[in-house]
Amino acid sequence: MMNIQKRTKPTRRPFSQERLEQRMMLTAEISGLAISGSHWAASEFSPDTDGWIDVQLQDGSASDRIVKYSGMDRLRLSFTEPVVKGNEPSLLRLLSPEGDVVGEIGGDIAISSDGLSAVWQLSREVEAEFVAAFIASGSFDDADDSQDVVGLTRRLDVLPGDSDLNGVVDLKDFNALKDSFGDAGQLLSSDFTADGKVDLSDFNVLKANFSADVDPGATRDTAFVINSLAAPVSVSNEVGFLLADGERDSGDVYAFTLTQNARIDIAISEVTDSTYFWLYGPDANGDRQFGSDERLYDVLVENGSNGITQELSGGATYYVRVLPRQSNDNSAYQLAFSQKVLPGPVDPGSTRETALLVDIAAGAAYADVVTANVDTDVYAFTLEENARVQINIDGVTEATYFAIYGPDAVANHEFDRSERIGDNLLVNSGSNRIARDISGGGTYYLIVFPYVGGFSTNESNSAYQLTFSLL
Image (cartoon, rainbow, N blue to C red; front, top):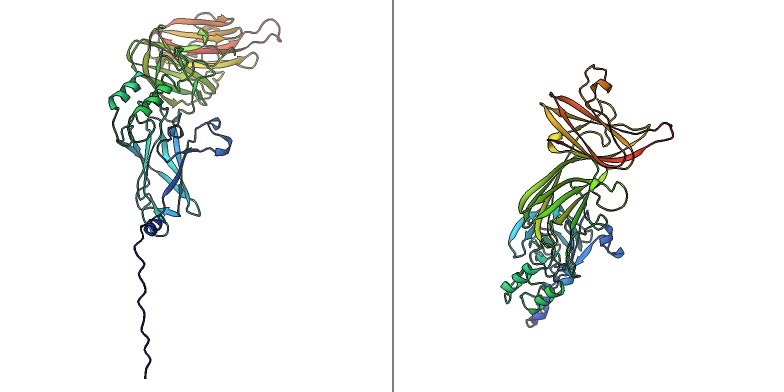
């Protein structure tokens, strides 16, 4: 007789919400976010951050969401479980302060060997006006169950209380908070505490930072440094308003360094009151001041728009100074910097053939140094017809000659006295100018050479700045 054993039915465990939640937690989630910028200065980071700034993921931690400068181009994500690259396109969505999608940025994602972290190198920098980053669900998948990793939306404020992102907490921010007081929702522009509503706590943040600013300084040493003009750079700010210390913002200064000769265009717009915009060359005499002889260009904008266009020599740092016309004036403004690299050597040549070609119609400006018994600088400019040429000379530190020569009439490639137009101009120091009426088209030359006295040991080594123009 066959012995048949009865199989017992396994006991079904009762439903457990806790076990379900634990199982669900096994799907990877984003547990950390850090950001960085290729052009951020090392001084912006603590020694132990290795070039990254951690961004708090939890709400209600406004101070951890502050990014006081533009140019983020890397994200570092941490995950609770190993991940792989997802099926969704690797795009970072940019949101406005109100939460509207304003653009997308692609890039390359490198996931660590253990799958617990990833570095996302964006294809371009994110400027400060974009204060929220949205990482779409499906950009990453759980390595085990292929489930989409839930995305992330995180607001990054430039300055607590600065709802319009103009770099200062002022009455416009107060009015924006007043108009939205009591509103609830995500990514509200006046929700400075990130708790999902605009209330008294947000007012206290604004009050604590009222008239605080991340404004450029007013000197060469405190200027806002534009790291690179390889791509166009735009800045928006105000001048003449009260700062946090109760003093009036007397001026803004922006600094940029050129490694090559370049044509610089600075578009000025959205000016609301009388404001000066001055372009300065290097600190020729080393006093760290803005001397009138170091000024290359100036323009007064009553309101609206204008611009500065100059050809500048490489190997030097230049400064844009923004000043109210009068002590009681205050104005908003916007600057858009761009450059076009020009061919030719950084240092002007010393012959007709090696002269630095000048676009005189554009009001070109240059800064350089000449050394006696070593150096002569030659600039060439072409005229289509009769013209009055003016060359402003500034920043001369020791005795230097300036002279204009016409075309090479005898074709000997030399600068003959008979080809000189007018007398040599000797500038001992400071500023001067040459103005000449020139007849006929052709290529003309400005020669710059140091004064040498009666003894060979008496040598001049002088800095100088030139601005060419047609009158």
